Image 1 (cartoon, rainbow, N blue to C red):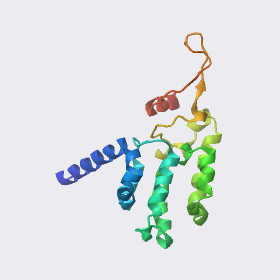
Image 2 (image 1 turned 180 degrees about the vertical axis):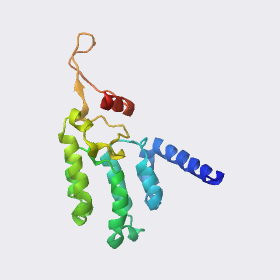
Image 3 (image 1 turned 45 degrees about the vertical axis):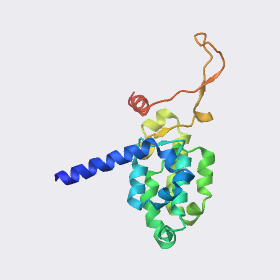
Image 4 (image 1 turned 60 degrees about the vertical axis):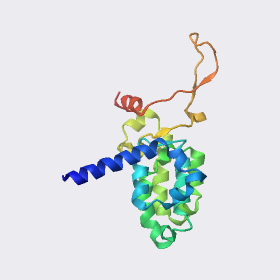
Amino acid sequence: MPLKLIIRYLLIRACIQAIARDFELLITEEWEKSWLALDRDQMIEILKCNQLVVANEYRLWEAVVRWLQAPNHPERRGTTASPLLSSLLPYIRFPFMTADELTHVERSQFAESYPKLFHPQILLAYKFQALPLCSRVNCKEFSTTQFLLRNYTDTRWDKRISISNEQLYQRGVDHSFQVSQQLLLLLKNF
């Protein structure tokens, strides 16, 4: 592999990691113009990133929808929308959306216009949510990168556990824990 290609690859990786750390800033109104100006390949590289720091997957989905609907980019809609969505949807981690958020995605203009692209993704997300962890581990359908957690910053109500233990100072109080992806992989291999 030529040195130029290696350097280019490393530079792209470094840029993606920098974007991943401050992703929430990129999708704010202040940076909206830059976000909407990203091209298809740049968007895919960002969506591929497992280290993306974002509140939740639905927030990322909303940002992608804004990008798709950018007024200065009609090529993202109409007849060219289907191939574009086909290339983007595998990188949206629908399984990590709540059932309510998935319902909003199902009712979106894009999902209603392109049901053949969305329905398999959404159905698989519902299946992932419905199965217990022990069944998910053995399901080959759940082995793609779409089932890896990003660095989500929200603590969802359905992902908390209440611990009331004699060893805790405040009994019966809700506690939240950050669980690393490595721990989840360890549990999966357990």
